[in-house]
Amino acid sequence: MRWILPIPETNYVKTATKRFFFLSDTMFHPKGPTFWELAEQALSSTQRGYDLLAPKFDYTPFRTPQFLLDAVSEQLTALGPFDAGLDICCGTGAALATIRRHCRCRVTGIDFSQGMLQVARQRTADAPGEASLEFVRGDVLAMPFTAAFDLAVCFGAFGHILQRDEPRFVAEIARVLRPGGRFVFVTTYMPPWTSPHYWFSRLFNAAMRVRNFLIKPEFIMYYLTFLLPKVETLLRQHGFEVEVRNMGFKGMWSAARLVIATRS
Ligand SMILES: C[S@@+](CC[C@H](N)C(=O)[O-])C[C@H]1O[C@@H](n2cnc3c(N)ncnc32)[C@H](O)[C@@H]1O
Image 1 (cartoon, rainbow, N blue to C red):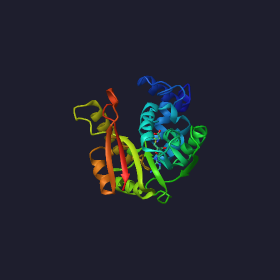
Image 2: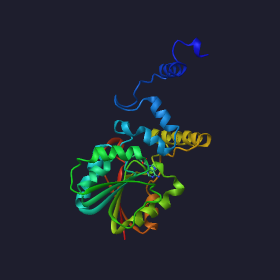
Image 3: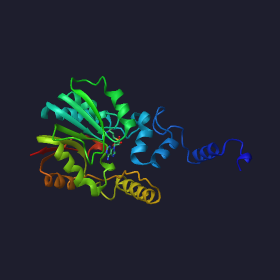
Image 4: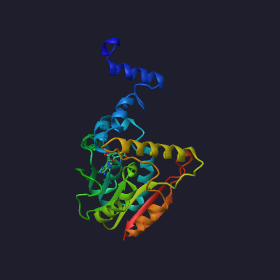
């Protein structure tokens, strides 16, 4: 069939699909990934998907927004300083750069994507702060650390932890924190079932389940996970004292809550 088409078949299909769905070359930003790059990522495993996305990740809305990190940083000022900080699922290092200024000795980013870690290393080299920077490749469900940290943070990654793995995930965080260490993160409550957010998330999750049933390896990414009040119970079960603060945002972020879980 190829000879019938004026341009190579794959490009023809891509162009036609793009025109049909009114898709632009780049999805979010001129330097961001194209629709096809995102599709390729979504059809790969979680780890490989992030390896592919890494160079363009910071130009997507998947990177935690700076205003949110700045708001958390303000709250950390009153809780710190800390000796050693850990950014769980650090990606390209957005939060790593933020917590460095609150840590005196070292900050460590852990992620299973080598591509993301490489970008993190470049992007955080000049981040404000004196603490040494470490990048560790590993699975956050089995972290290669002892109880060595006073602060652990995790942003934009709870959707990559299956709900059945959440107890193991929280147990790992409790294990790598020193007594009195803090696990600080932002989450929210379940949105009302009448909201577009709720239905978008449910439809996305359903599509993901179909994708993961049909295509292996799986891409683990589900919305509406690690939510209050369930996560508070889970943290308490693993020996944390939990404080939940309203972050005071307006509009679509008004439901955001800062959780400060202290290992007792
Ligand atoms: C959406 S990115 C978030 C990056 C960064 N924390 C931020 O807020 O911008 C999610 C990151 O989690 C990592 N990740 C997902 N599951 C993981 C696992 N089980 N172990 C280690 N890293 C994981 C991915 O490689 C990716 O870099």
